[in-house]
Amino acid sequence: MKIITSVGTSIFENCLNCLNNNNILGQLHSLKTEPFGNWKKHSNKIICIKKKVTEAVSEENYKRGYPSAEIKSLIKIKEQYENKCKNKKITVYLIAADSIAAVMAAELIKEYFEKKKEYNIQVKFKGNYFDEGNVVKGNVDKGNVVKGLIINNKERFEKEGLLNLLRCILKAKEIDNLFDEKNTALNITGGYKALVPYFTFIGQIYSLPTYYIYEDTEELIKVPQLPLEYDYSLVHENLFAFEDINPHKKKENLPDKDTFIMDYKEDTLNELLEKGLVALERDENDTIKVGSSFIGGLIYQKYVDESHGEKLSNLKGTIMELKLYKYFASKKYPEVRITHSYKVNRKDGNKDFEIDLLVEKGDELIAAEVKPGKNPPISGDKQKKHIEYTLTQGGFHKIPEKFPNAKNIKYEVYLYSNREIAPKFIKQIKELHEKYPEKTQNLKWYHLDLKDENLDNYEVDENKIKLIFPREGE
Image (cartoon, rainbow, N blue to C red; front, side, top):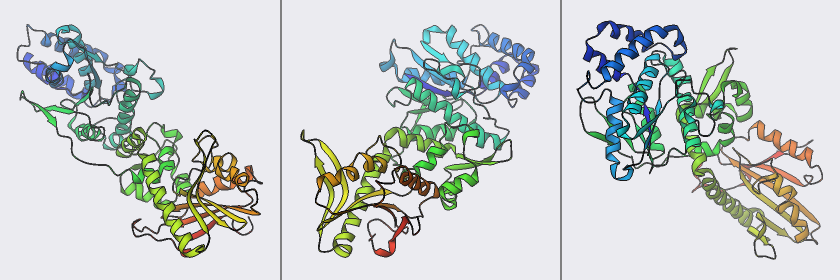
């Protein structure tokens, strides 16, 4: 069993009040908002406070139950899972905010369970800032302090701290196989209250049991899993943009605002900002950078983990193929043979290649592919879904061999979206033509404008089809 636990400072209030030590409490107060980076500056004060708290935690001095909310809740969660976890060790991952007091508390909690071996709870915590680049397998606890997660600095909390929190948790998930709903739980009892909704959202997105004990009560509360489905279509339709700003990227590697707009259009940025999926932040050179928000990064990661994109793409792509097929069959080529999903198998029975739409007009052929326009799979000769593969190894490449008597074969790619195709992708198309001048001489690219219409009612007509490459003179 693995438990991700946020850390607060209740261990100090509980233990120091027990000792009636107002002087130490006064020293502690300033450390609650002091960034962890200043640890050495306050080393004498830290040693003094930790010594007093350690004394108070000892059984001789502390006889009022559990020394902190985190300790109490972890023991209660273990009891909850006793049937599953009997004689098995529970591993706890402590996550500390960017505060000296929070880090001290985490260290004291770890020391408590190291002494109380009867609980069979192993605590992972390293008093260093989390640095994604330094984390290696088997060393998830390389650093469990989240830089920028400072409660008295709203801007740093929102723009730096929350994203670092997401990176820290996602890296632990990746390296140590967390987020398995059968073996992982979230404990949101401790920690700053401002973090509760964010940990809760992680629990809801990944269906993780989330637990809480309210103040002086003994009852462990399990936050119910809401019966919600998340709409990943905005991530899917802007997948290339999200990959450019994914939550694992450091600020210096993020695109600036002008570059993002040039690549993906300003209305894309505005829509993502409105939905709270991206955030703008100035770097040290006063350049405005575009990065994912906590919510945007979490939903993007879930989308990638669960392969929602592939399922959604297949469904929407098939619908658009059928819409274009209907237009070809009823309006553009009403008296010729048109095949949707034209397939050719190898001798062993496995599929050799497939063309979305094949139009046979006597000795003239039109082979057409239908792809999403907001994240078109253009370049790449390793995956069959990419046009470069289709052009060099797949259907476009093999169709002349299948129809040796065809005198004229045209190739068309239709990119569907409710916006103009972003300049970044037009550039990729041009580069593909420059790379394969002979193979692309009969290839044309069209934008199939969805015009923000509902797909159920959408009908293709000539006014919604626009040639985007090559244009006249190209």
